[in-house]
Length: 343
Image (cartoon, rainbow, N blue to C red; front, side, top):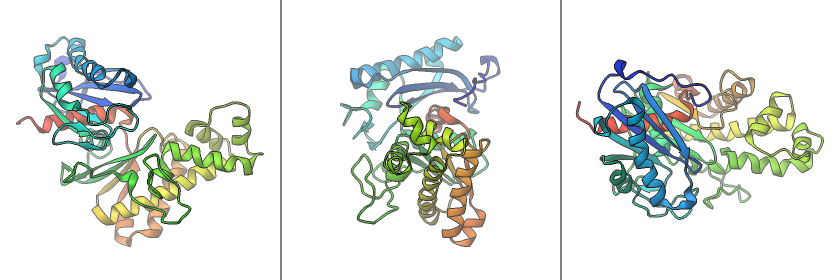
């Protein structure tokens, strides 16, 4: 949804009550107003400006709720509840960001309560990837399943767990930190930005893909990817995907190797949680199933799962791309807020 024009529902067609969802990222904040069926009535985004400090951003997130109300001509009090998703790790019970690696200066900030003050509503607080999983479960690719896991591939690797229609947060608010399950115990294992050795984030994030490409380019100077970088193009997953689509062997190998590591991690999660479906989302999906590179990527993931999982799980577990794109988090936080309102 984030790559195409959003279809917004007219207020007259909405099923009440209405909910607002806010998705805080390191670069942008996204906010959506949705109805009781998860259909979007309004959307607003603005830069995070994390360098201005957490209180400034919390105030702007609160004002975004008022902005959403104004966009459809309702009072803020007509919104039943507000949901908020932020990067982890967090203490969800107290509403505090414990460590926000991409939001310097935000550690131990009581973000839930500060946003509540500024928007004038009680706020349901969630991990951003958990919220995205709930959005997919509610109205996205997971709407036909009672249990699923979502892995989000972006700057890092996040995730969410839905079991028996419930979002799982864990005893210490650290459930679904999929990026930090161990996939490589070798002494030479790669290190993730948190300093963990051999975890999924060290191999399957956009950060990791770029790092592996930088390591490989000197030995593959004749590849089109290496030549593009030498010509001054920025090394990004988009560039790697573009060169893979053009047939560059190095770019293709880098993407398929990412898929192999992701498949290894997914098998561990399948054997632990036994979900009906595994969804893959986030910014780094290489165009999805409709693009040749995206199709090759997910087919390589599925092949790795088939080679490692118990046969029944390999046969029965659905592995597919998520469908809500960058809107999953804001829709999902609104959906989680909805669960806190009596129906």
